[in-house]
Image (cartoon, rainbow, N blue to C red):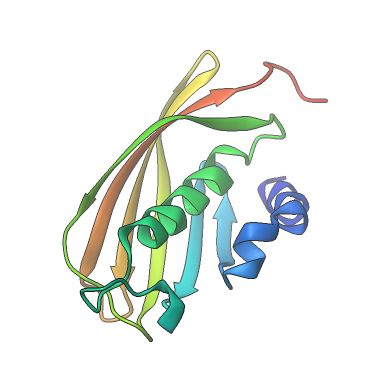
Length: 134
């Protein structure tokens, strides 16, 4: 079910496809997203713009919380930037569900470079748009 949900969501997700984000793994309450930092994603300091790092984490979060055939969106999210990423770096964001209750959920996402160094820690709060499957 999780894979089917991800495939349907990815087909409609123009922004992720445009940025080259790949969903490499998905299971109930979990997702892994991968992106290569392009030259156009680098800011004036020569490092990946935080908005792109956030976007990658948010994408993994979105795919993790949409694995139950219930349309779910972000209600809030926070990010802590830990280390810089640079053009050419491959970033992997792993999202893990911490808890679901009622129509809400809490998810943690760790973004790492290919060498394993943590780039960012993200926490997202989700909200299901309805409580039953379509």
